[in-house]
Image 1: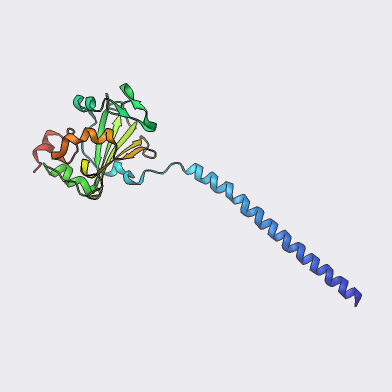
Image 2: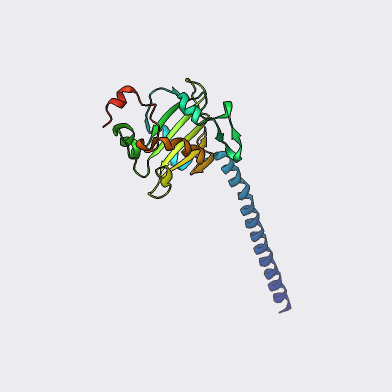
Length: 206
């Protein structure tokens, strides 16, 4: 009887140790997974800003990069950069820059067919700022997004956004005074500049 009881106690202790060991192994294994996931996330890189994801597959409005017109560059001679820093000179996103414009499908008809365009909600226009005419990578993207009626009545319900050249980091967005202050002069064309349209493209506007 005593021998059986001794064996029973040994079995209980062994079972308890086995459970404790299993719990410890599982806990350590679960903990070890966390750094791996963090490492994978760090290798994945920054994600594109969703509103402009794949913009290079949209309609390219001007076939070749164009030099920013002087009157527009002058109007934007002082630009409020990230962190509230006033940027002028070569840091200005419009000064001595070339640019290429893209428009998504929603805004395509207004951009390319309408003489007095009215862009529908969801229209997105992306302007690549290039340091030279043959630049392959933009240094900056300026974006206009048509929002719902009442979003920004002072500027045609456009939201303005400044994104870094990779298209992954937003430098500023919203009712950016520096942007819309410049675009207010273009109410007849729904607050956008279309100086980049070719003569042929302008002739077909109705």
